[in-house]
Length: 269
Length: 237
Image 1 (cartoon, rainbow over the protein chains, first blue to last red):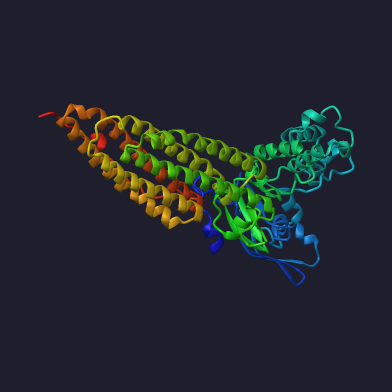
Image 2 (cartoon, each protein chain N blue to C red):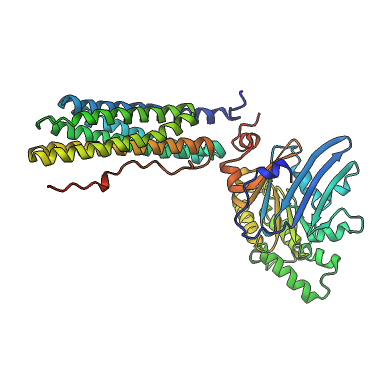
């Protein structure tokens, strides 16, 4: 355990310490010669929302993208160290990244529904992963995923209309439904609300809190209020370094590191 | 821009004016405390009356500082040390306001006392009064200068006040038993002493709040407890 993680107040909420769902161990990321992440040790606990915060370019999105190997698609990107999902090394050569991304889903900053119907957007994953065969199975997955994403009531009469015709907030919930449809264990969210208005944001935040019961969530956000509202644990990144991680309440009321204090109070120079 | 300044400079101005207001209110409260004790000591009815009347501006400060704190919470959404500063200001103003009330109450009793025969324990009031005044002064200095050591040291001194109060309590009981004509004045002095002792308690609250504001944690040890007056009994022989 590094010095940084030691600083965090011990988590007393879950009595017997839950084993981490995902674990980053000395994670380094390079884009060409430039090192974007320095030895990040970070545990992601199950059924919790972990928020990653920090100024632009601090490495929080880079770390998030390592968790489902989204960085693989960037040629010049190199990942070192170890990241595990249920103690299984996700960078192991025997592991299929496509299967990994079914277990570790992702929701992006800008809602990006496929140019297909609402129904097909959600059915897409189960079809390509072959998790559902019959029409009835797929119907059920579509309905339950849309319901879990808090969208079903709003779209149930127009499932065959294009997903792109929905409002921004609805599109983002559609993307969450699409991520849920393949029954992932972890959901990564990269600033999922930054393109949404406050009401749509509140709906997503409410949804995140509900999803936590069944999924482990990691969210990158630029809004500290959002991190404070939705997460149980918060990790602060700066210049590629994980500066501090701890219970969200502690990070926002009494951070240990002066850099964290400087950032959350708006003093960062 | 210094390392400790906010990117949004008006946020710094807001926090600074909040601290400045509390310092001003603290100054008024210190004066009230000093004047109230002096009014008792000198049997100065006019001064006592002024102390009674000077409580209103203190209450006005409380209202103003509360409004400023609320505004800061609503508009700036402070976090970390800034959040603690605002929460601390809310707690400190209510302690200061209570101290001000006790001073006004002492003023009221000083008016009554000035018309009653003088009894010696009034000098004991001066001693407690000066301890309380220096305690209030130190906790306010600790607040203004973010001085943790001063706050902790002041906090420990409350014990002396409690002890002095207990001994004054005994002394007053003796006077009352000696001559029932002393009961009226002694009772007023007893309430005055109790008021001063309570002022000391509120000053220690402020010391605790300063500790919380600086460190983010509660003060560890238990509050000093030297006030045994509640357990003293005196039976006529």
